[in-house]
Image (tube, rainbow, N blue to C red; front, side, top):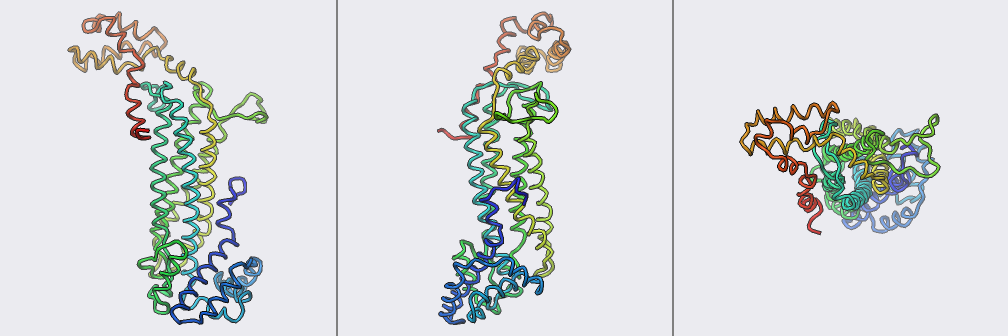
Length: 435
């Protein structure tokens, strides 16, 4: 985790103290269940809770023990025994390290998802507000980066809102899929621990029992979780790239907020660069980078190995922390985005009416011209306009082949900007509902 791109709320989920607290809770809840089943004394379970629930675990001491044992869970249990005393012999009865590690990881991923869902809600709220603000603000739609036909800036934002709504639904599903618990012992057979212990721990930790856990929770669950984060990151970059293009000097239809005292360049005082959206592109690449190791972690040997472990120790914190930061930055960018409708109109008019070419083409075919001829008539009048030689509507009116089919008034009618915006309300209802 890089402090520059880390928010404390998400970072706290992955701090060693938080991890050890979750480990303790798993062990203590298991002890409660074992006590109810008569496997360990009830007084021992009470003592474990009493001495451990408010404890501050000594991370340095655990690290010291691990340097000797070369085993993180054993190091933790040894330190816990120093806190709890003799009753600690009843901790971890019939359990294996993966029971603790995998259940803890899923608790952390679930909590991380909760924060990410809240981040997405902020992004969605910002997109909705700005979409309605610019619902009917006309701008040029582009394909291949080239002027195509008119849209509205509100539609651009509605598109993004629909995309992030899908992202939210996927993340809710991924959170549900990852919310399982394994307390099944070596190779997952429950030979040394009753399945009812797993059920108790799962309920206490807000999880569900894993149907069959071998000795680990199946990593296809985690692969889907990180793949979902990767897709969300791709959506973040798609919107960030849109802002970057719109802020180009020769376009300048929208621009990141530039605060008083902000500097754009160490050499050129005039610069106002899209640094936030560029940063989002970079952060998104890092989140997506963890999708491949998550997929490769699915193929573990037999009932378990630990080839997944080292990767997960990095990807769990890094992917969630980075995406959390990116989503909050994206929300702020949209909330404060500067929008320039006059520049949008100027760009719309830049090609002298060429954006209405399809309407003229269709009209000619409806008047009796073949599609091949209609396309030829329209294109031969459009190309000079590309070269800056005349006005498209005027050229069409002076073309004898076009005039065989259309009057001047009929040609003029095909240059109505409002025609392209007549279904904006329909699209907004699809995205945002009747309200």
